[in-house]
Image 1: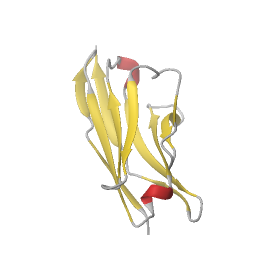
Image 2: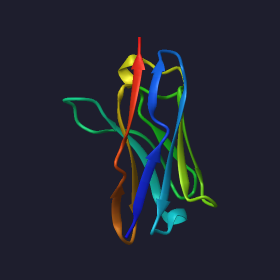
Image 3: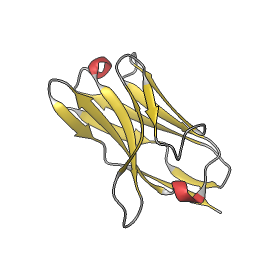
Length: 116
């Protein structure tokens, strides 16, 4: 049974940085596309960034140039480096995995709060 566990969220001032981590278990991590999503109160869950098994990345326009997604297949971990944070980045951030064989998995989420 696949499991994802996020960490690294917290409270930061606008302009600051945070790095989120997502540790995966119970899946063939290196074969999966991994992604970060976020959901603000009263809003839908939106894509932030994805990274394929081959290392190709994709970003939401709102975070391009500020956020960087990366993965370490030796540690079964995906990261989201967030720089120049803005109050509108405040949300619960979720890690997601897509396995071509077994489907989708979600973490429990980690809160990121950016104060102005």
